[in-house]
Length: 298
Image (cartoon, rainbow, N blue to C red; front, side, top):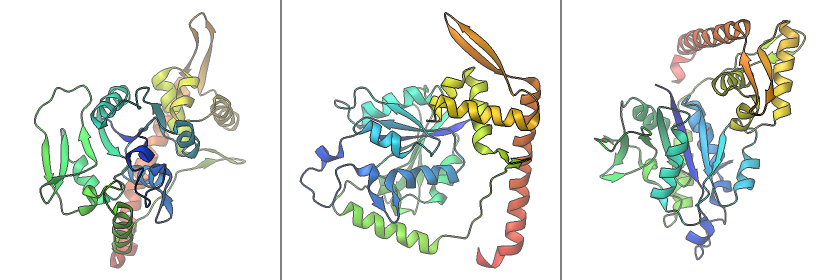
């Protein structure tokens, strides 16, 4: 079951907090312990390996889209953001999320202080779930788009960060202190990216994800839009991979009245499958080696 994420960032926080001097006009762009709020949330979701990540925009939509242009997220705009409350925005976001994933982790932009441990517990739930800290419901939460209202797992957690809203009184200060404390106590971790090269680097996670989305949508233009990149950049990545490998990754069909389409070739599909399988085996081996060499620091 594919699990992705949805960040709700469509509100006009300036209107919500007009009289509170500590809160910036556009909350998602506020720098919190070295990172903007929205990039901190995207990075945390990426570490949890959820994909795709959707960002629901509204107020300052173009500013936010430009800020996230290199973060491989899908920006979707809530056309009714001026009138929508949290429930309406959530409904609009889940409607779009249902086109991309079977389960979705939802995070309002004003809740950036949750821990990675909480996130892992949330993903272990089979159905809808909400973290609960000392009787108070927090964020992020797990939803199943399109599923009728049913039983929701209330997940007791010790993580106070899930109920720390930047919109609360002294919210920025409290969240900053909490994130700093978590960083100081955070366990050592490792990351790697599988990059293939010949004369130069030509294939990595970005190219893989792009081709996978072309395979899903049948369209380079749609895949590029989903990853918030230009159509020409998408073509450039594919052309470079084809040049280095000496075979076609995509079959191009010129458009008629309904437009063109692109399909993954059999050779291209086999290459993608091998890349994905090798990446999975490397991650498993990497975890074993990491624990072997750095156990005393964990």
